[in-house]
Length: 399
Image 1: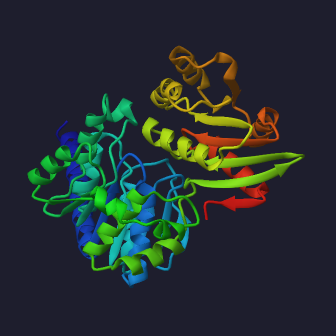
Image 2: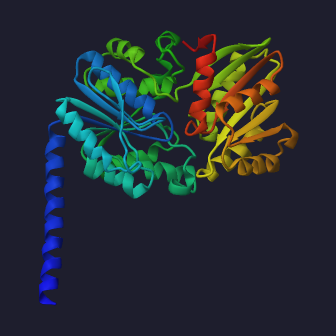
Image 3: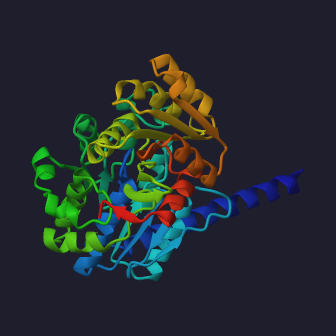
């Protein structure tokens, strides 16, 4: 018995000692990277992370960037990208490997997208794994309510958990600014908010340089961070225009198919009701004369709250001629939509269909001209549908 207890204590001591050593080694590696930027928020995290990194690279700051958006990517100082290898699925501990890689490339700056949803893990990621010099929260909207809810202010409170200690916190959020102010004060950090004037200062010419649709709020926020690090607007924008967009970035493609003209808009990455309604209205304004308007919702069985939210919300939006439901768990979306007042005859179910089958369904629903816009989730079949249209389109819009 005594021998067994001694063995257990020795093993426990070894594990604790090993953990302490690894934690200390990680802290030393963090200190080798003078600028650490941690990006969080409901919408636009990947885009803002890419924009900041591109602005810093253009200025000559040796920068690595890691995004966890549509596809987890590691962006090296020369701008090349590599997928993040996940042998056992997504895990916040992978941030340690990212820091190691940034050190190997002798990075002067590291931009990391926060990959945690659970409030306690958001704090852990910042306090133990990143220890940011610059925290960034894009916005706080109704999404992932099953984890961060039940309401939008709860989402803001959860996101505030990654406020850095004794550093700077940047945000483009305005409705819940008081929450971030409280968190910054508690942790001795300075809150720097993007104002309406900052967003208005982003001109159409500034946005025209992007090969996809980029939101003025994202650009204003990224420029604010770059400016704090000494990068002027002109230099930062030059870098941002050259950077690769996230695969989920909003793009549009035109396609001619046996007498039908299809305008496909990739809005799959927008998944909260507010953002999704905004881009749906943008698409309708861009294509006002089409004969058919097809709203495509990519549902996920593991995101039931999102399906129900969007299903209830669409009754208040400008109407579509058809609502094409793809992915998995489409029943929840359909039920919520019908209960909200959507005509059941406008719902078209294409659950578990492949991209080519979904394309055929869109053609069947189209008249001589149509707008087909994807929303709700880029993951799963959403990205396949985007690639299907991109590979067959005659023109790429939103230059």
